[in-house]
Amino acid sequence: MPSPKRFLGFGALLQLAQAVTIGPVADLVVKNAFIAPDGYNRSGVLAGGVFPGPVITGNKGDRFKINVINELTNSTMLRATSIHWHGIFQHGTSYADGATMVTQCPIIPKQSFQYDFPTYNQVGTYWYHSHYSTQYCDGLRGAFVIYDPDDPYKELYDVDNESTIITLADWYHEPAPLRTQRPVATLINGLGRSVNGTATPLAVINVEQHKRYRFRIIGLSCDPSYNFSIHHHQMMVIEADGEYTTPLYVDSMEVWAGQRYSVIVTANQKIDNYWIRANPWPTRGRPGFDGGRNSAIFRYKGAPIAEPNTTFVSTKPLYEVNLHALVNPEAPGKPHPGGADVVIPIKHAIFHDPNPRFEVNNVTFKPPTVPVFLQVMNGTYNAADLLPKGGVYKLPPNKVIELIIYGSGEVDGGPVSPDR
Image 1 (cartoon, helix red, strand yellow):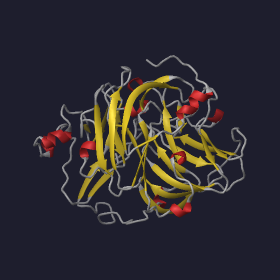
Image 2 (cartoon, rainbow, N blue to C red):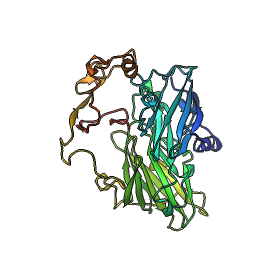
Image 3 (cartoon, one colour):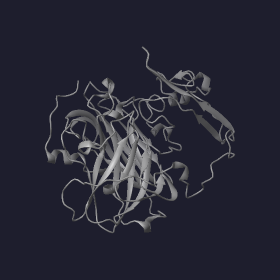
Image 4 (cartoon, rainbow, N blue to C red):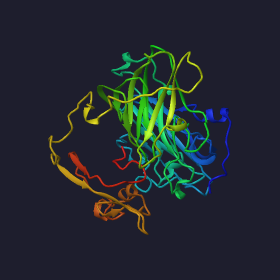
């Protein structure tokens, strides 16, 4: 059960928001630890004992070797684990993808597994998270950045480091296996306030007037999306999900679970404090800014240590249709629906009857006793013979595949999308 409510002091809370950076070769210990990002003290499933987890960084062309060590002990939460490197293609290294019972068995307590994978020419902003059931809702998630020495936009900004990473996450007071409610708080860089909570410290993004910053905005959400803005500051989008885009100026953006954007922001306003807002989708979070909820502080050097009093109305929101790839923008296949070699419709549904389940094309994924990848390595090549039945699609090599993903009603539980 959740621990009794306790409130921590200012210093202990600030430790949650201090970025720890590791990589490209490192140990990553997954363990239970008590944290109180919104003032409510509870045990979580944490990478490195912090939330968000350590920032994993490297440079273009690096090979990552991350040894994940499972030290989980709390039986109110899941104790096996795995890590998925969200956005990494894993060409030739499917075994390192982290999807439990698809590419690997989960890592059991007191054991470890080294994820060893090249990233080739991939650069940009990614993230990592548990890929074992709903475990990452309990805290196992963090930023993953691959820096590009040949960044075509590097002359347009002055600062790009761990201090310019902005993570958006939902937080719960119940362990994920017992969760019955919507998130109680939005955490920006690991700090936030909950409904009817206390005025705990908020995350502060420090800037210096006239400097230009590349902010990497990462949706670490388990469920809700966020409408993100920095009051009175335009954002120039230059990257989306690890791909450079043509520059696009916006003053707000919707950030869904798993999405990442790089934006360039010039600190061109008067020295003061400005609100950063991340308002959740109403049916999946608790929107509103009363008491400093769903907020962080954008603070100029020389500004007083105080909360902002700014107001703002967006007039230039991000419309994703206006985003265009900087390099090779043409999608594969022919430019019309059905213009691929193979077309697969994906219809999903969620049921809340006595047998809660999530279905794709009328099939619920049931973890097999042997991971799918291991079944293939042991000689089962026919997709129809792979377990779980109906959950594996056979694709021809070197062909263009089109997935038609149909919308449905409200869906719970994280990124309902191809997990890349």
